[in-house]
Length: 279
Length: 316
Image (cartoon, rainbow over all chains, first blue to last red):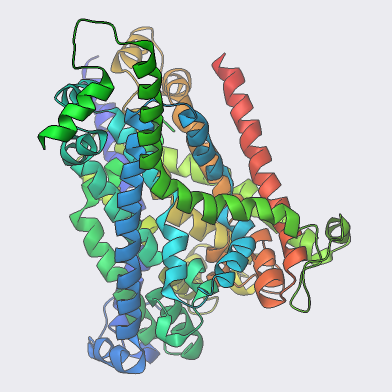
């Protein structure tokens, strides 16, 4: 009697492993295709049946793309934006979160409700008035527009607030009694304790700015201002038959993000879990 | 350093411990506290108020004007909204948006919950699988769209090659077919988003107490009964959050469609967000585009409020 359920359980677990591996293969298929195609000659990308191993392996695409496309400019612009937006978001977000999490004053909760309310408001619905406003400041077609657009999001405030609330109030109380000002408590006590949350916010903001397509599409007209996403999209339009080269560009646009993700995966996962659990 | 500290202690009413602080210092303390609190919030709030709140409010005003590239904003009342009623393209966009949402929301929730339950089984290699499943979410939409377009290529794409092994006869034309473009977009949308919601569900599953499962097992509940009567009720807060997020995300879907099909073929995948974009940034009819945007805004708010109320009622 005891052997049967365990055999059943074992076969159940085997089934789970099979499901998991099949799902993993299915999910990774587009990435595999992307990398494999980038190492092929152009006329070998679409073949019947699919060639899963490039023969010969063509590395040339990875040299050609730098000549054929303005990758250096795109990467530079994207880096400038990602770094600036991340710095602003982390700084203002964690600063504001301290006010929301550790201080008590009239109007605080109403203000926070305002932040939460905007979760339900899609950016697409107010992008036109926002564009008019930023244009009226003369910032259309500058990198400043994207920085303004991305830097003050509510996400950073949420994430940091959730984390700060897990830090016992007794710590800041003690520091207050010792005579440390609120700014001092934020900088010397809370910030050092919230390194994991800061890492989460940094990585998530950096990646989402790197990947942003719509903001740059609307604001950045000059080729010299293009980000990697805009550049890649126009490259696809111009060389739409150069499948191998397009896949090379795609690999290059994903590669930095893949590296950051693999190195900082823990922070990614924790950051998303913190904002999600409590809502 | 000594003076500011001493001053701070004085204002905090801490110089003479043991004695209850006087009335005046307490109100000034409150005021001081509020001021300091505001200085923390202000740098972010200023940006937030100017760049998010202001446009949201002006949106409603612009939607009531005839503002376009030729002239300044003229008040036209509800004319733009009246025009929406007879606008065929708007109807198409609205219908397609609901099509996307109605399929994408349940599919994404079921798939990501399924993946989370799978990962929660403490299998070996689960950490690796989590990485894999989350990876599409952090990949840029442009790279995702171009690679999927190639995979979906009707004649030589690997997907149809694979399908031709399973089924005989006509294969779907995917992104070049009016009927199959939307399913193709939904497949990619789900593939890209499910890792994110899987993480949220996974975090929620950690909060389900093990004892409850144990008790249900002793009472003779099978796996399905335990899932339905223990896991799901415990997941309700997570479920609520995920549902709200997926819903909003589905109704505002834009960049995926823009780079994958550009709304085509014809208007087969034209959605509200893209219609706003076309009217506003390609035809420069700011007033009319804003009216469409108000519709999108109201849909999202309404759906969220309904879900919120439903959740409240279930909670009680």
